[in-house]
Length: 447
Image 1 (tube, rainbow, N blue to C red):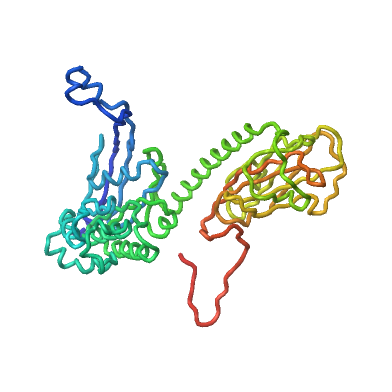
Image 2 (image 1 turned 90 degrees about the vertical axis):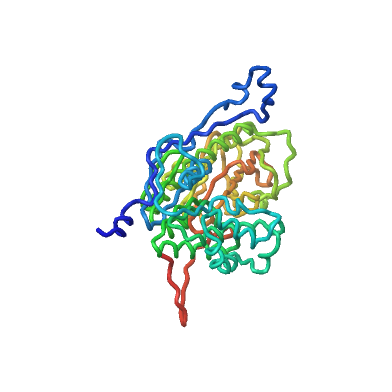
């Protein structure tokens, strides 16, 4: 094996049983040193109230020449891991090994001085990253061109917008030509065109055998760009390996947590409106508008002659759920109880966006059902074969009212579900569709 092959075989980054513990100070203001000495409270005033682990017994290995993503929720320890690799902070225990020259796109432009020009800051920042003055002179035009700041490079940095500031920091760091590139959510430093330039630069790094360690919430980028992914949760490694598999595991866990959160939120809403409020003004309503009333605050009202005692959102297996995917089936089930027998009733369901825009509304009167009788407890289910909705949060109205619109029990925006989708299209409704291409055009699905 040649020396080059041997270098390629060794991991570029290794973290072995790393634990990083931070101290948390609850007090915002300490006593002065003088008063602490006089009152003999120096130790108690300046010691941390508690500590917490950002990473616990964390191990990972990144192959030389590969691109690896760290994914997970905010506060899971991803950025801490990146800072350990960058040498910005040291582990409490365990070892961190990095082979090769590092450039960290973590705190872009951290060394910039606002009072001097962009040109002078490029030289200062470049030297901080290990370049010589001659190296910077050779790369200066490329740095400025990449940052798209030719017109402003001799202006004081304090006159730059935040986007200009970050673009310049990114451009300097990316042109250090490191062996290991560390990237922490910096793809939001410019517009879409600049983001594509960043991704092209990352791809160029990979082609040249450089190593990229990336922290991002863009799961599509992870699947398209990275060779491996590591999922971190509460400072511990939950999964690693093929990006698609790890992303699927992570998304599944996020859905479970969202399901739990939405279920708890709905339970609180239900508890707050457990009794039908009979002393609130009832909005004017007609059979035509009962299924989709004008936007209003969430709440519950009605006479209570027929009461909705339970509402469930059901998945394709008939199990309660709050998180669905575009195209999934969903059913809304109402359990109702009438105080006395009546033949005057209409059941209604409405779906709204989180902003209160009506997506769809219907009721049994609109759909030509004739009410005959209800006396006691009954279940009413509305089934949707497929939720043709874009990704987002949606609210459900359920109602039972008289034929003239007088509400017995109207529950407004009290039930929530979320739709997930890998396709990030816009709007609310996602009709089933397909594309066709003929003539002098070449276009294929992305791999």
